Amino acid sequence: MKRNVLLLPLLIFLLIAAALLWQLARNAQGDDPTALESALTGKPVPAFRLESLDRPGQYYGAGALTQGNRCCLTSGPPGARPAAPSIST
Image (cartoon, rainbow, N blue to C red; front, side):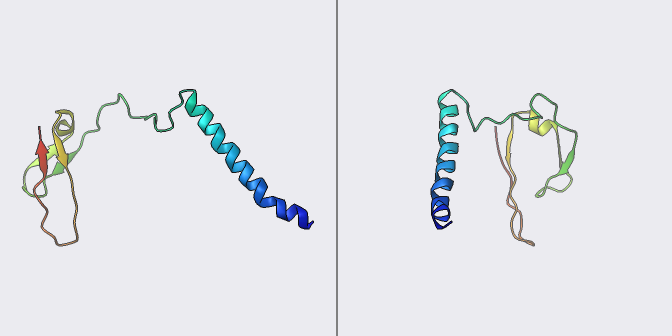
């Protein structure tokens, strides 16, 4: 019984090593673990209307995302004045 308990860490190590070697073999065959399939690829952006934080009365819609403009949305602590959005073309 004592011998079986002493072999348990070795068995766990061997199982983890086998799993890691299996993944390395898959990577060597061309499987990319960072490539994730998205269910939304190729689908249109849903319609939305979002008011600007620094310019009340100005709204952004789905078209703002599809025009190629980049926008950085940030948030800060409650009550803090929002910084102007960084938009580059």
